[in-house]
Length: 161
Image 1 (cartoon, helix red, strand yellow):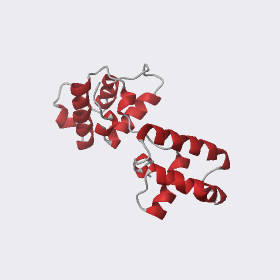
Image 2 (cartoon, helix red, strand yellow; image 1 turned 135 degrees about the vertical axis):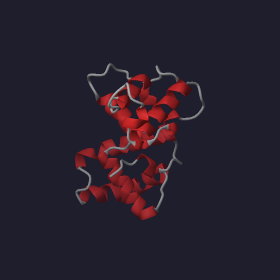
Image 3 (cartoon, helix red, strand yellow; image 1 turned 45 degrees about the vertical axis):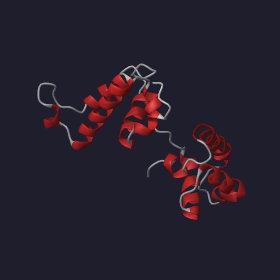
Image 4 (cartoon, helix red, strand yellow; image 1 turned 120 degrees about the vertical axis):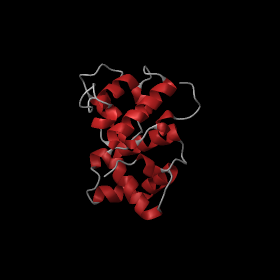
């Protein structure tokens, strides 16, 4: 996996959710691989003797095709965590959503500026973010900036409603 791009960019939201589920499953040996993610997806197939398409819905079929492509490109022993899209905590997502309402499509740097200019304090005062989470939000946002750069679009890291 020596490509010069982020492999998580190849992953759909749906597959990222399955990867997250596999990573959180204590019954699955960790660190989880793409092969283990494929096994989880294939649990949705009713029978191994009938054609896969006959028993799978469109989403399951898309997930199977997507994981098969990733395995073909990167190997079934590739660590699944590398393919999971990063997601913000609930508190950081609240900050992102408020910033999107104010600015439209802010970068992580713009989000940081808004936070420093009082947006985090305002959200805490309104009860949308717990005061105990403020330091975590700051650290989490800084980690996203360090990993993805200040120009990354903040909304791409927000959790889906």
